[in-house]
Amino acid sequence: MDWDQLHYFKVLAKTNSFTHASNELNLSQPALSRSISRLEEEVGVPLFERKSRGVQLNQYGQIFLEHTNRALSELTEAKQKINDMVDPSHGTIHIAFVQTLSSSYVPDLISRFHEKYPGIQFQLSQNITRKILNEIHSAKINIGFCSPQEPYPQLSSIPIRKEELVLIVPKNHRLAGKESVQLHEVAEDPFIFFKPGTALYVLIENLCHQSGFDPKKTFEGFEERTVADLVGANLGVALIPRFSGLDTEKVSVIHVENPECYRTIEMVWKTNGYMSPAVSNFIKFVEQQTT
Image 1 (cartoon, one colour):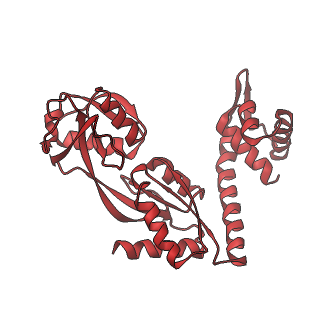
Image 2: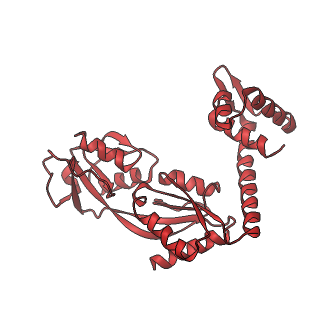
Image 3: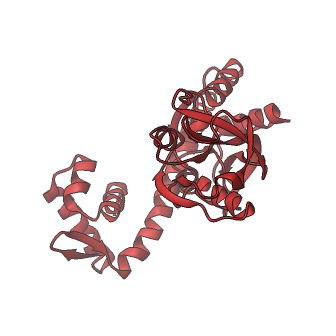
């Protein structure tokens, strides 16, 4: 078996469809099918259950996927380590971050780092905390800036900043225009929430429980801008991190006195994974900036 076979297997396991997998891989379906068949012959057992509308991993395939993920991660780290040995001063750092850091924090941080290390390049992406942590764990990215709510196995982190969570309400809301409120004052209002599985979902639900109520969740969004737009459409109220570009023509932004509403943003990286000189220098640089 080779790298391509393992990669094809991983994509097919993710999509559960030869059609979708072949489109993602830019590979013909017959070629993908032959590659998977050869892999199954080499392993000695079928890895998928064939169904009328696609495929699904069987018990053998689930075990093989676990080891495939580890093998591909190890090979990726090995290739990166060799590249760094060839040219250690011109590495690439892969970073993912939550939306509220995109307007100034991350760009400013990279700009200051480039003054010291102009040869280092960056690949940037934006995502929610859960997906960022998974990408670090699988070695798809080197560093994440996010807000984990509990320790994550095999990852290290340091806090870099606190972000206030503000209450936003529609402009015609009874509390619009107030400078500050108690969170329990919106206990009976419909709440625009973040999607389950996001760090903000857990944090905001806990803050509501601290205030003595279960939020009446109506609509949900993955990111801050979507939640703010739903509030601006007069569909409810929300707690969100303050971010650049919030449309104050449609929503009123209010400080919450009680409970204290904030989230901690952390820099997160893999504890025992290979760390290139570029990544190591960047982590040290950020640590110096936050002390």
